[in-house]
Amino acid sequence: MAQSASASNQRNKQFSTVVAPLNPIQKPLVWVGVIASLLLLISIVSTTTVTQGILFMIGIGFGLVLLYARFGFTSAFRRLISVGNVQGLQAHMLMLAVATTLFAIILSTGFSFTGQGPQGYVFPVGLSVVAGSFMFGIGMQMGSGCASGTLYTVGGGKSSMILTLFGFIAGSVLGAYHIGFWRELPSMPAISLAQSTGLGYFGGWLLQIAIFLGIYGLTVKIAKKKNPPKMEPLATTTGLKKLWRGAWPLLLAAVIIGLLNALTLTIRGTPWGITSAFALWGSKFLQVFGVDVASWTYWEGSDALSKSVLADSTSVMNFGIILGAFIAAAFQGNFKPGKIKPGIAISSIIGGALMGYGARLAFGCNIGAYFGGIASFSLHGWVWMIMALLGTYLALFIRPLFGLKNPSPKDSIC
Image (cartoon, rainbow, N blue to C red):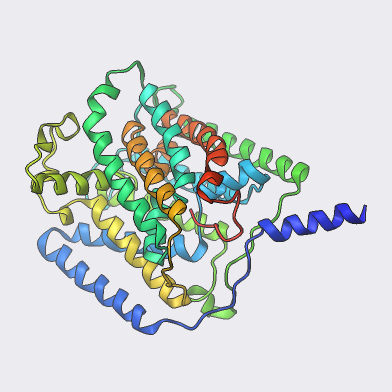
């Protein structure tokens, strides 16, 4: 019995997140982040519109929240599948409940701050979504981060995530190049649990809230059965200093992220997204070398290739996420890029490429498809979640081949 208790304590010590001492503020880096943000904001507003500037600042908000809370999608799925830790998934359900409630109001009333009629992310459910989300589930475990996780950990100073980002961009471009083939495969039409079912937004809201509660109840049972190790905050402090120095509670971050996504919907007319910008960046890069990317099916009817990336709302929000995370990491004194082991480097590139390719096939990533899709009442968002979980399960057998642990006590990022 004593040996069993000792083994349990050892397992909890191994898999729980280690509480780190509070590091000194990296003041020069804070100033670099603030000044860079102000200069980029001025450039965005002066060359595009005020709306783009507002979206950039919302992106900064996302970056701050994601890093301060270490809000995870990848880690949530991995901890759930590997050790039965449900805290991350419970936070997802709260985030989705907040966003679904606000999306229902916004989409049903057409509320908008800018006069652009809001539209959710409701896309067809076909083989491309099934294959793409499964690839993404594998990729985010190999790359140790999802779309939002890649951005905020790049800003937070994790060196390997730069390689994940490069792989992400390359995979997104390849997915855009192949998109014509995948879109021709068998597919159901776009199905909204609010509009397609005849339930309306109120009925759809009730249905989804019931699903969220059901999943939450299931996670409680899983936690009682497996008694998994708890996730602890990475750094602690007291008083108001917690706002810029300490770790934010996971559930508080879930509420704020849900609010910010709703705000994004009312300002730009669509929910938060990330990976379409990666396809744009990579395609523009190929254009420099004379590649006729404009002829690809993916870019038909779009003028994004002929404009500055600052005119792309997803791009400016991504820049904001990176800078917001950079500022938060500097305030915590945690911006400390390190060396990358060869196995992790290879895994990061492959994982990023799988995510980029998969996101194009699945009409989005963990943000555009999973978060934005479900909040928009799209069936494809739920399919994405299931297939990404299955991809995560498979990836748990692949990660050790590249020197990645399941789960790592320090790997509490997205």
